[in-house]
Image (tube, rainbow, N blue to C red; front, side, top):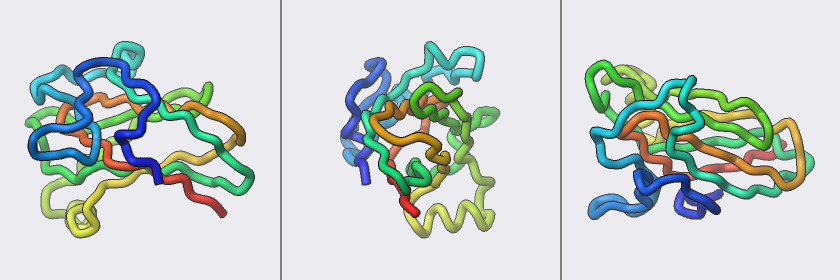
Length: 143
């Protein structure tokens, strides 16, 4: 497990490693920050993690705090790239009181994963595209 605070590089002061009420993750503040589209990923706030991936490592799971719909008309998204791969965009939004939302709240996180297709030293980059998203931890799963 990699705690979100163990990043090797952060791209901007908009990413806060802690706040008075939350100290176990990284979030985008202030909460009225703009959202970033896929066309503007290069300018989006991001975190970099240096990983060493071994044979048998099969997936990287990114866990975020579960949320209610943060802002009307906005999503709660992040993008992930591993090494030289194209970033993949994920939404953690679950409609209020649905089965997915309930499960996220009960277990304490929302989760999205990417497959591992290479080994060795790799850079994992997580782009925070919408305010209200809090990255909590990263797990590497093995076969």
